[in-house]
Image 1 (tube, rainbow, N blue to C red):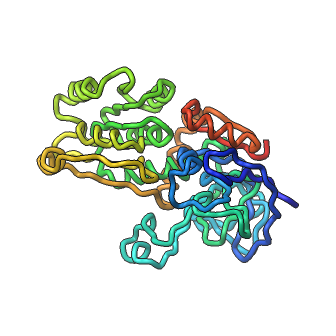
Image 2: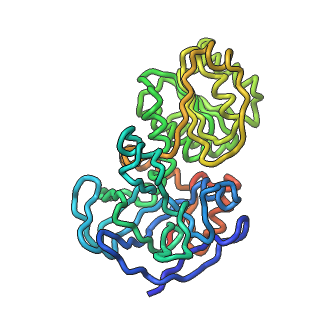
Length: 364
């Protein structure tokens, strides 16, 4: 049997439909039928050549959910439940070595020096070829962390749990947020909308969003944002005046940069109260610098500035639970679906922000 995949061969050029043989499995490996694959903003950045980690040619796609169609030997999910053919599963996007300094000593696998990700670090030029989710089937290596999906939830709503959902979960995990805190979220793409949902679940008193797309601002409001500021309609000065008016002149307790833009981070820092925190999770690849006044922006404010790099299995679990608890809301996050052959159109609507979240359905 041959498997169809959409292959990324040249930067800023259309993905090409290619055929690959089904690989022979080794002990502990799974072959899954990809039922839904997320088209992430990071995929767009890779397609544009902004991510230094990739090796062409490759099959994009680090977000996926599907059904086990072949299993070699015994494999269990993260709860220790044996897996079998026919099970619906979601897999953690990354794999870590489990034995480096960060895995063993600091217990922070997200910083593993040997970490790799399906559909990011993987080329399809060598066997087993099927290493990204823009394909009909994907081979999961034995070390993959698997989540068995027991619920009758629409599988495609779970797709973003493994990337934007998990990254947002990591941001809140390290934020130190307390119930009743006021929160600012800069950026209202999938990452920012997950942040809105987490802020609400953590008990935020105010959730102020800043974004430039009305559809996305509307969606953020439906997920729990209490205030929305359109950066195309309000100047930076007007946005600051609005935030200060809402927080009795202090600034927010916590600001989350979820946009991946240097000026968004700079603005977040300016809107945090003295003694507050700014959490930056939007930068998935190099994308510019900012200038800070070390006295006024950092020391005088006693500011805690927290960077977020990717996520770990714990955070994927947090994101899945959030989606399962609000499945009807997260159905609306998926605004566009496409068959596999239209992967280029899916990338286009994500790049133009016509879509909040696009998903490929390889077997539609």
